Image (cartoon, rainbow, N blue to C red):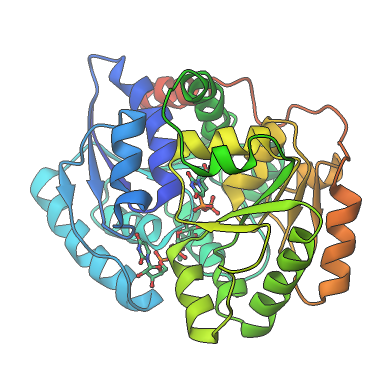
Length: 363
Ligand code: UD1
Ligand code: UDP
């Protein structure tokens, strides 16, 4: 079975690390990676391939940046050329980025079966580019690999045939379990570990367009994090989108005592930071789940989340960044809290389950 896997953004490299390793254990599978180039800085892309042992991409299209339609369109045209030349048996896609949608459209129009990992997630907010990407991708996919029961229900509600939906668990859980030990065993770490080694700290990440491209929301986030840093250190690895948005609004973050703004971390540093933190503050999908995997309370700076089970279980609190006092109250409520024990993301064998389903080639 000849598979082309399309990746482009940071979280997709991590998901691919789990599934590519599982696929490699099947001699009948030949998987090659196509990197769209959506993320391109070394600490957003190359570092993940080196650290996580992901096979080097067979193609790198170098198509990052630009408008939503511009990026997706350029990727679509270039992916189509590769798929016409290669005619794989399946195209494998992750998540909800522009690279995901471009790959889905290119493959479906060439009648190449699409496998979608992380199918069925919904925010029910069509202002998010990711919601459009994931709904459209699901509806042209042949295999839909749902990470949670709520994702399965969403797909049922949208009329997708039950035989195409596979409830397998979350490959990010597989990755976190696998790499946590590898991260612990390393000798070299980011210098920020030394800064917070003997102090409690909070780990923050922010990158969603709805927060970075809305100046009022970004201002609320900055003020709330600065206020928090007055009482407990805050480590904030800045996504390039966020760094640019802060600079264009003239929002200074570097000189605040206790607020440590750093470059994006590699995955191994990141999951160790998550384990060491007292609390996680984020608008990331992946980071919401990882804070739960490592038993850390999380505050999510969004109006809604696709990972509803963590809010229900008390591990995650939604704090829309519209009012500094409300966000600050959420921080204080979350610090020191814990949710109830739940296991919504499978048993850490999602990648194996996906690989064996693909190999059965159900149709
Ligand atoms: C994208 C995904 C989002 C995902 C996130 C993971 C879409 C619509 N969004 O958002 O779902 O959660 O990736 O991190 O696909 N940039 C750099 N260097 C890089 C990468 C990006 O400078 O290595 C800059 C780009 O030039 C662009 C901005 O960051 O100006 C945003 O990048 P983009 O890939 O469009 O969106 P993300 O916010 O990263
Ligand atoms: N991540 C990382 N370094 C960072 C921030 C995040 O390695 O500085 C990892 C994080 O541990 C998680 C993934 O990137 O595995 C989440 O990706 P991101 O937040 O970019 O996107 P999302 O999950 O929201 O789509």
